[in-house]
Image (cartoon, rainbow, N blue to C red):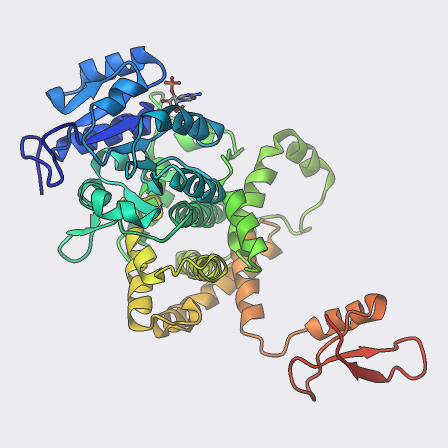
Length: 496
Ligand code: 2AM
């Protein structure tokens, strides 16, 4: 471990250790984190006043130096130059890269630490490789606090860069593990793999938040006060549900404004979103993976945004005639089970998507290592990521997380509560899209003989799409003349 006065391991004598472009909140905090770990950081921001104010305010002396131009900032760095970008995702990243590249040399490294779309990172790596520049797309999670004290960092892209940035990124990352010394930062894979893993992290985060919001809705409907619910979340945070999001939910529910009013009660119930949940669902769909809990979480935010329309609908559309919530008889154990089971299912869906992306893009992702990166520093950090990491460590070729003995046991004990919660909420007319989606996925997934035979028959009926038969080997396709003479199945080399 280094401190502000000790030299960093990669320091060379002819220049400063690392450059950083973009001094918004995340950028500033990451610079302070780097400086605290002994790195001499050269900073640049489009608006120079921001640079000047920041450099004047910080306590690390000449560990942090501001530059007025990108060229000066680049010139201050030792080689290979390492430059972190924390600018607005999208075209701004391309613009900044464009303004940097004329001043860079072969072997220099650009690390994009913003929330870029993984396909952009893949494109940027390819384009910069033509100029001899190593591009790294690094997902960074943990918000402002994480950036300052240790985020989860998910780097991917040009692997040649890794030996030059490994010590630095691992030094500033969060730490986890029994001795709390395992960095939550490791090489993820080529191309946009780092930003992909970050995107899935954010999608799962949407799901986790919705799962907790549904628990809040049910407990409120049962008449619990905010402070009672704060206590319940706090108790949940002592056990298997221990996680950052459960912890902050307890603190939020306990919070009052200066006038004594519960802050949560005066917040408009319309959720915002920046798009990473939507990206996750789009990618999962493209890969043929049912990441349905996250899809429901994204959808629930959309419905929440229809504030006026929902008020109108409440006047028009009836719920159950016996009154919503009045006969909701759920124990806190049931609701705790619903949260836990829904999360297990959501993470299984997330890792199915990661597995599919790894195969599709040939990234060779180590799923256990991904789970380890999320143990600390990031928003979804939770004790049960240790269980996921262990599951993949024991069985690297685990076909599905739900097949791991721990998951089988955990779900066996929690799914009853999830089922009671969905039944009771539905009977009471309360929306629980994440719980219902998790349960119905679970029931469909564990059904060996489903009902898609009918779907196949319908497809064959109206579109001659053909079908496989239980009494013939897989891969042989049949068509039935449904409206013709007796509907005989005709075998043939049809393409489905
Ligand atoms: P600013 O302080 O000059 O606005 C997050 O918005 C970060 O991205 C900020 O540091 C912001 O710089 C930077 N940024 C936004 N648009 C930019 C652009 N077109 N060129 C360079 N930096 C930009």
